[in-house]
Image 1 (cartoon, rainbow, N blue to C red):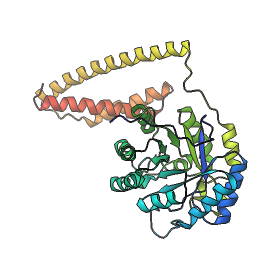
Image 2: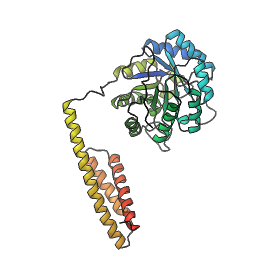
Image 3: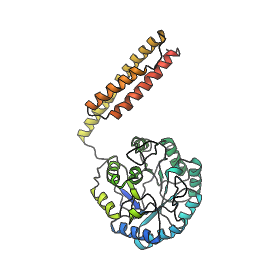
Length: 357
């Protein structure tokens, strides 16, 4: 289905990139909320975020102050003039947030992964006119992400955006959640007018990563940032390692380089034409390689050989990775390409062994 989205905007907000949403991971106390909000407001932040209900991976942790915190958000609006935002995970959260005048909602990664929960939220939002941001599901599933967006869209909302917060994995990693930038890039390709925000706090999991991840998001043309900021992050009740002070946030935002994603020049057009030519040549070369692979498949069939020749495959991978690194490309990049090429070669050879060629 084709979806037409409206910009994520509220009266009086500057429309230039990035739209910044900032505030603590969790609303802990009224004093903590007000101190953080006033500091952020003094530095030009217009949208204050705070988690009221906190879905935790395991039981026993701090799971939010509940509806009482919504009264603190109302006080933030009254005393600072900021807009306020919070996360919702079910119908009750939506109704409570709307009743207390919350201006923007976001849906968390664990909720996005559950179509039943997404439909419950969509049903609760029918008739509302409020911006809603939808985080990617915890697992790298773009169809599930788009499905969640469609459910909110089908409820009649049009001010919808996506939040890229990275993806969980079981192995050790540099970031708390792997960025897998190709997924939000593909989302932008499929839904070109969908606003996309980056959540560098959850991607990085550490304060030191927030600045470079924010810059990368801006370089990729993302529309906004949602960043966790706390008046005393070392004493935060949840996710203290990924929260920064309002002062640090101010420095990060000041250092961001915002490039015009729409400006094109004649020189850039010429370079893009070169890319098109090279892509066509790559496809021609891959087609030739597959023809040779099919000939190899016929040979294997005639001589009753297995399709997978592990030693040969390992030899190819090692050589191509070495060649790529010598040509100033990442070995992992070439490994991924060669694995994909090998997978297609194996598929075609299996078809030959089945007698389909």
